[in-house]
Structures are given as C-alpha cells and as structure tokens.
Amino acid sequence: MRGTALVIALLTLSLPAMGQEAPAAQDAAAFPGTPPVAAAVKKPAELRAEQLDILFAHLHQPGIESRPVEQRIWELWSASDSPTAEVLLQQSQRAMEDGAPAESLSILNRLIGAYPDFAEAWNKRATLYYLMKRDDDALKDLAHVLDLEPRHFGALAGKGMILERQKKFGEAREALNEALAVNPTLDEVKAALKELDRIDRGI
Image 1 (cartoon, one colour):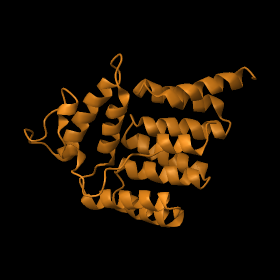
Image 2 (tube, one colour; image 1 turned 30 degrees about the horizontal axis):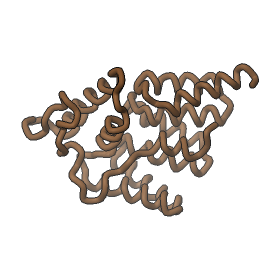
Image 3 (cartoon, one colour; image 1 turned 180 degrees about the vertical axis):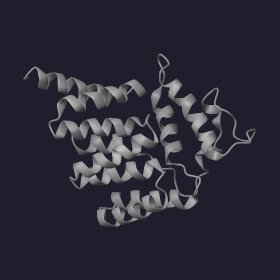
Image 4 (cartoon, helix red, strand yellow; image 1 turned 45 degrees about the vertical axis):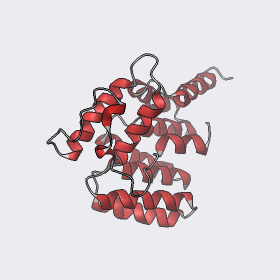
C-alpha cells in the first residue's frame, strides 16, 4: 500500500479557484475536437459530457501528455449546474485541508442531500471517510460515484487501494485494472498492480 497521500491524490480533485470561470465556459481549444461552448445550444451538463468523451479518447492516444488532460477532466467533474454545489464542494475541500474533518463531513452531507446526482460530492466524501479510516463507508460512496460516472478513474483507483488495504487482493486487482482500462496513463495504479504481483509471489 502506497499510503494516505497516494489514495488522496487518486480520489480527490484539483478544484478551480474561487471565482474562476466555470470549466464548461473555458476555451476548449486546448484539446482539439472539443466542441466550442459558445457555438453550442445545449445544456451545460450535455456540453461537459461531450467534452469528457473527447478527453477520455485523448488519454488512449500514444505518447499523450496526460497531465493537462486529466486536470481538465477533474475540472469538468468538479463542475455543477449549481454554483451553490460548487461552492460547497470547495468549502469541504478547504475544511479537509485545514484539518477539520467534522466540518468537511457536515458540508458534504448537506451537499449530497441537496445534490445527490453530483458524483464529485460522493467522491470527496469517500476521500474523507478514507482519512477517517471508515473504509466501508468510503467504498459505499465510491459505488455511488461509479454509478453516476463509470469512467471515474480516481474512484476506481481509490477503490482498489482501499480493497488492497483490506487485504481483498483479488477485488483490488479488478478495480485497479478497470482504472487502467479507462485511463492507461496512471503510473500509480501500475505501481499498485506490481505490488499486488509481489504479494501474490510472496515477496
């Protein structure tokens, strides 16, 4: 197990700064083929879904520089049609970073209660549960994330890491392989699978 920092990195997101333009309204030209938002007459959620499809396709291109693509995916996942939901997500992140887990959990409970279809809220609470060593609760929240966003490689990778910590190695390997199928550039996941291979060999 690579420890808390790695799981947090895989489960959590890089939130846009307060006041930053919403991801759906950013210039999509950075990723060729991404439909220009200004020219579309679609709902923001539909535009985000289209952009995600293109970005996930980019991750499978040979020699891709994955970091900016992954960052953009996280930004889109953190976006909501509700500015209130985005603000609450940011507040929960700050509380978590400030070492106030009870406050962060309270915010996330309110956020999920009001916006149960916001996958990133469930993902953030799963991260918090992991930090609180409530692994079963974290896995339940990750299941909600994956119901809402099956390609959430952060949730899949985090699920694999938690299952590995619980010594459920077969299930852990399955989750990690699913994460790689979605995003083949995840070096941390490849390292985790190598660790499972060493465990299998008794090294």
